[in-house]
Length: 136
Image (cartoon, rainbow, N blue to C red):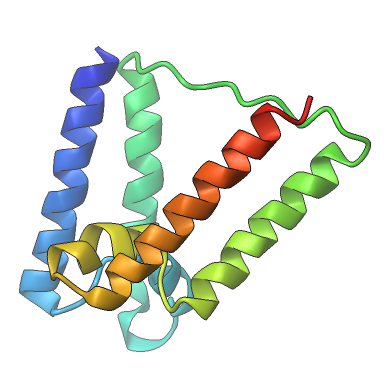
């Protein structure tokens, strides 16, 4: 069931990115949509973001299992999570895009900048996961 939902979710992400680009000429980069959800384009951006959240709840409603990530067992577990989230936000602003903008849309457009960004965040993510795995 989870494999089918994952495939369906991936196809819906691709279709929504294609539709947004074809109809509006906009890149479906989530961080860009979040940080610029003001002005005339605010309505479609809020609908797009609400649809992302609704899709997750819908998947849970039809039986998708959810991973349970424990809070890090460190003295500042919650603080560490908050700092990590803040770092991700800063990184998306510095790279002028996020995993969805660079990974889904940028690579599909054969953007060299997106390829560099994806290689960077995937590489650092793998190094971080490896370091945390063997830190205990």
